[in-house]
Length: 169
Image 1: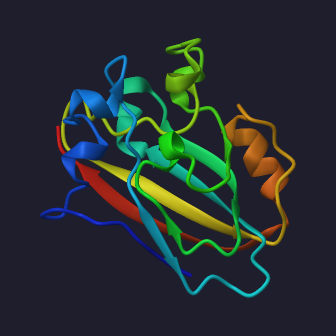
Image 2 (image 1 turned 90 degrees about the vertical axis):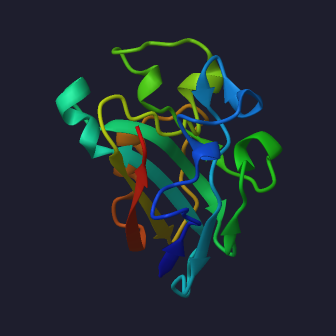
Image 3 (image 1 turned 60 degrees about the vertical axis):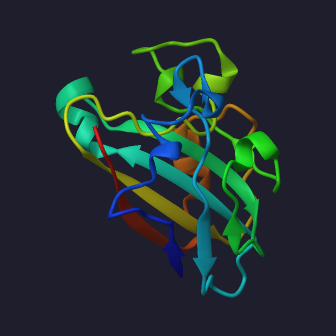
């Protein structure tokens, strides 16, 4: 399986992160998700799951920062469109991101679930996008945690592919 995301000069375009226009933010958080093209998914793919994690956040927060945690994207999907969460162009189950955790503990569901774009605080960061092709739809409720997805995905991952997407400070 291969995945691709449009970049500008090697970086995720500003509209998807820290430098987004106000119309693409909610309470100061970037909410316009970037498009993902998926090719060569294995036969038998019933659904996809997507994680976007900032491992470069460890020196700042003490742990990897979860920016996007979604599952149950239909297995015949070849393009996850830009701004998919706000347009609801394809079905999916949205999980919690790091803003829902004890560190931030927001109760605003638009900030605590689904996509919240990169906001590197100290330097340019590499955000690891991972797409999982799964042989089943996952038994997950909206607002699931990443560890819940990890456990129910066990034994159902046909393949996974990752890319590092750089975002500027």
